[in-house]
Amino acid sequence: MQNAIDFVKDNPEVFAALVAAIGILGGIAGNWISAAVQAAGGRAQANAAVDAARISAEAQRMAALREDRKAQLAVFIRCARTVADGLYRMESTRWRDMPPSAPASPSAAMAASAVASPSLPARSLPGVSSARPTSPRPRSALVDAGRRLTQRARPLVCGA
Image (tube, rainbow, N blue to C red; front, top):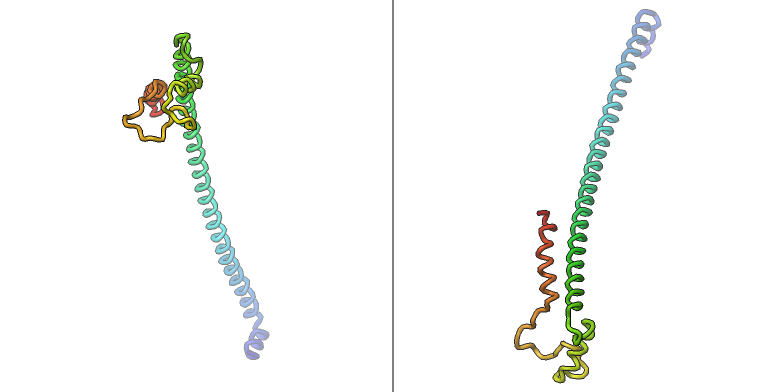
């Protein structure tokens, strides 16, 4: 090692070349390090952009689903309102067209049927029996009308 130091001291041109070589090698090493840092930063930025695009796509999908649900709910409410209005009109017409001797309301009709039916036990509800019926119960006109109105409202729900 001492011989190398003495050689450099004796030849100033070698010292100048050695200093220049150290500067050049340092510049090259610095460029390699900065390129590696920039490449890592670019990869991180690209990953962040991919994540942002993924999140944005999911948010748009959720917004579209929310809009679809709102539209379907609006159609359902419209159909339910149509059915309810039809049932109300039919029920009010039915009670309006009844003869004067008929009960004034559905609850009065149930009470009248309970009084007129001596076979029911005193503690049971009107129209409810603990015995198994021998024939199927007749459907009321209100249930039939509700089904007809629902059948008419279904094309609105299906989008037809």
